[in-house]
Image (cartoon, rainbow, N blue to C red; front, side, top):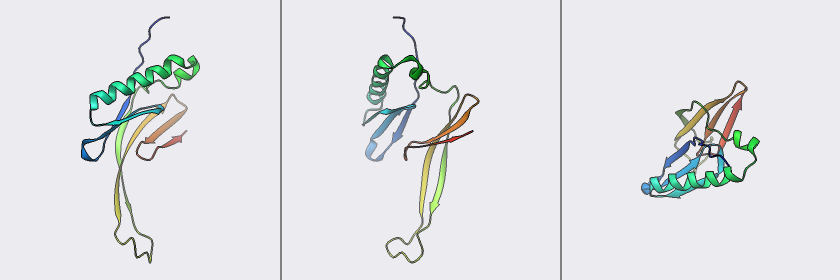
Length: 121
């Protein structure tokens, strides 16, 4: 069987205490947690490769890395509900977003921390 190279986008989130969460974009079932970034990347690549090897060809094409990815931060301020004694101060959230287009059909935005994908025509 011929060998093919497939680009993989790895999303790396830095958590507290120098811990990281590495995920493969378009492979929601592949994520690794730890403190060694290089080891996490290798594990994600190895696991994504295993999935691709067993997957039907039409499904593999849906997992190809988009040609152009854009990342940005979304800043939100959540204010407490009125008359809530347990929550008094607003909470400021900083969420990282990855955005790309899926051909001419759709625009996709992913908020990895929340596991949310938003699609727009």
